[in-house]
Amino acid sequence: MSEQVESDETIAALREEVTQLQHAVLSHAIVDQAIGVVVAYGGVRPGTAWDVLKEVSQHTNTKLREVAELVVRWPHEGRLPEDVRTALTAAVSRVNPHHRAEQPAGS
Image (cartoon, rainbow, N blue to C red):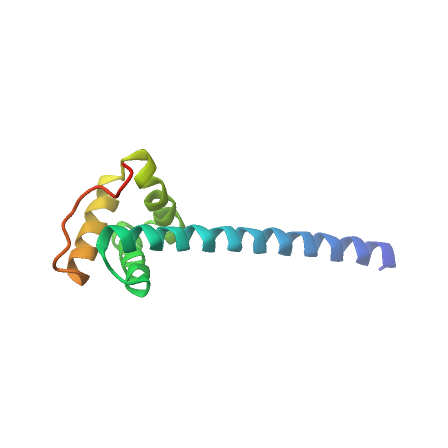
């Protein structure tokens, strides 16, 4: 194999890795934002909010990143799919019995 072919393959592999890392960073940021929304909505700690998001993801059979995107948009759009909203309310109510289901601030 020539040096040029090896170099081209290395560049292609590095570009793919950069793309994957950029996607991971974006996903992490969205999940962090969703944790903040759940903290504000449910009156729970960030670690508990993370657990709530995982539970909603599992109960709705929706990828965690997708749940996070929906939750982050919720305060601005004022709507959340019914299955996600039901699962979110149930999960928050389990960890915070004093929680009252209501729209997040700004909606």
